[in-house]
Image (cartoon, rainbow, N blue to C red; front, side, top):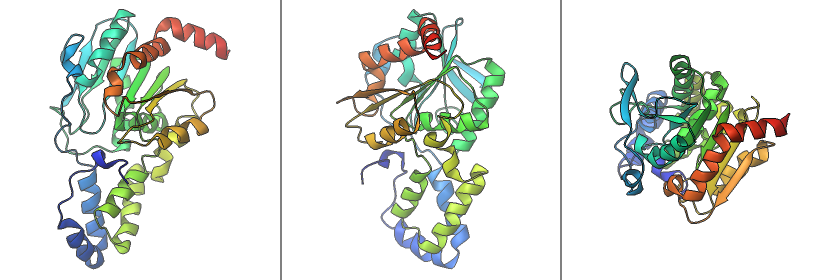
Length: 291
């Protein structure tokens, strides 16, 4: 199953054998090790040419000690952007340029464990609680845009009280709680340790981890949403987007073809649709239609 593989840290050939043995002798300790391994980003995905081809580079800011971001613009409604697993803030550079043209400023977070931001792990709960904290620091968020794992984090943020006026989800796992279990099985975690592993996930989430999934959280707060996904996405299957669309009445859903998982962020028609969805003029129209 190719889905979700780029979210995985490389698994050495010998690891399934070691985990198989350790997971039967010390299941809880082994489960905790695997949970930490899966939550730890390592390295970054290759830089795409379009990340530096258009728009301005923006400037680095420190939102709080150790948490960095890239900012474009210093006035106008705020668009908060979250990159994906092993992603980077420059992936939003082309979109930020389009948003600036419509009078919106963009702040793209450099997630914990990525780039120069501190931390060695990232989980949906950590990022969800972080979004609430950031909203208190930077003020009201007009729109939040999340790509891949960053979109999944928006779902967790909604659980903890993050309330942007608009949500845009691009190429995201909408049932993110399934990914750690899939990766643990791929790593060879045996049944005794797998049971402990699931308990750890739920404990770390502070609730059943599935309650942080976008399919569970996004439809509830009444925040207008826009979902974009490519039919041939090789990383996150299109079925993830279909699951969210089926669970979320009123969700605006855009399907692309041949844009892939990351290049979709720079596709002109996708950027145009996102800007039209989050720009203040579009907001007024959409609110009037929903009234």
